[in-house]
Amino acid sequence: MKSLPPSLKPRKTPVQARSTITVAAIFDACIQVLIQSGYEKLTTTKVADRAGVSVGSIYQYFPNKQSLLAATLEQHLLKVVAAVEQACVHTQGKRSDEIASGLVEAFVSAKLDDAAASSALYAVAAEADGAKVVARLTQRSQKALMETLASDREFGDTRLVAAIVSGALIGPVQSLLMQSASKPVVSAIQTQLILMLQAYLRAAGQRKRRA
Amino acid sequence: MKSLPPSLKPRKTPVQARSTITVAAIFDACIQVLIQSGYEKLTTTKVADRAGVSVGSIYQYFPNKQSLLAATLEQHLLKVVAAVEQACVHTQGKRSDEIASGLVEAFVSAKLDDAAASSALYAVAAEADGAKVVARLTQRSQKALMETLASDREFGDTRLVAAIVSGALIGPVQSLLMQSASKPVVSAIQTQLILMLQAYLRAAGQRKRRA
DNA sequence: ACCTGAACACCGTTCAAGT
DNA sequence: ACCTGAACACCGTTCAAGT
Image 1 (cartoon, chains in turn green, brown, orange, yellow):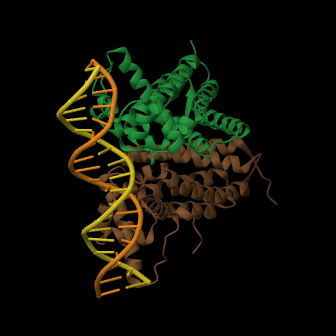
Image 2 (cartoon, protein in one colour):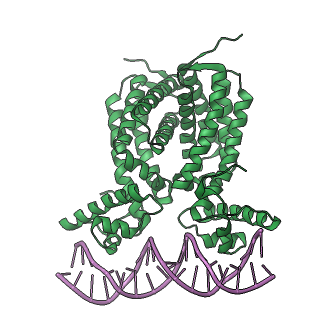
């Protein structure tokens, strides 16, 4: 298990079967309460009740409420990162147009797959501990993106281009989630995002010659 | 004064001189505490102390902590909206390339002008009441943007294009703020944003013929 | 090794008393 | 009309006692 920043590190690693179940129940309850009550009204007691454990159990695995929320966010975002990384591997060596469309489709569908949770966790992502999680995972998916982008085109600064692509994708999708957009609106936005990123990648770098 | 949603509406409108000063002091203190302590550790007592008033005074003008935070956010974002609207008026009728560069420059400099506050208020924008403020002001600047975009080009759905432009701008700038980027990084990102939006606008709509 | 829940400190909000 | 601050309810966190 990779080491986490101090405040995110669980106090105890579950070693017995029941504790693993407890932690899973806590994560699940945390998302449920977040969806039902929202960030402001989330209470450690509500989470514990919903998980079927006592408050004390939460503090056996998380040093405080913030770290519980950050860990719940991380769990959720790891799925999105995995989808992005997979899209990058899949379009590696293809043309930038295909990279753009593959990336947009993977990201949008991963986010919308669990839209309620994505939306409810938005406030967590903005808070200090959550922001660190976001920064770390964003960097991770940008790394994957850089590699794939560089496989087709030559950019002055690939890291910069990956950061722009990433941000330009996150912004519109975030506003989609906040307004719980309808299916047709989602696909219209998706089309425009693909168009935008394709146009950008063509403008920002030149195609590499092939052997 | 335009009417605000219930939860944001101040309980009392300042009518005497001292109360106007009090409200201004509370807003100012709220931002200071947010910058110093962050969203999680902000306390109504801290804000009151910093403003030089008692807690009770805060509740004379705001029904609760959330509405105070939302109102503080609104006050801040109104400056950004004003900058965007001004840029739109200024580039009205010009070519989409100029609209894109004018918009990016206005938005980035407005956000970075008070970077500490922008960054500290990020968590407020993600919370329920704050999100409503953001939604309302975003819509307002998108309206201005639609008009300006339509003055040069014909789009299938101008509202959609404005939403994409807006989101694609907010995303990368938000990540700039979160990592408190250096001056050169900021201008590199600004250049890429201009490039991206110019390429997108050219790809998304056709130039109108001129009389 | 893990769980419980009463107990404590602290924070949001109110309201009677003041100017 | 506005301000004060003690008082109350509630929430985050702990820890002694349990299995």
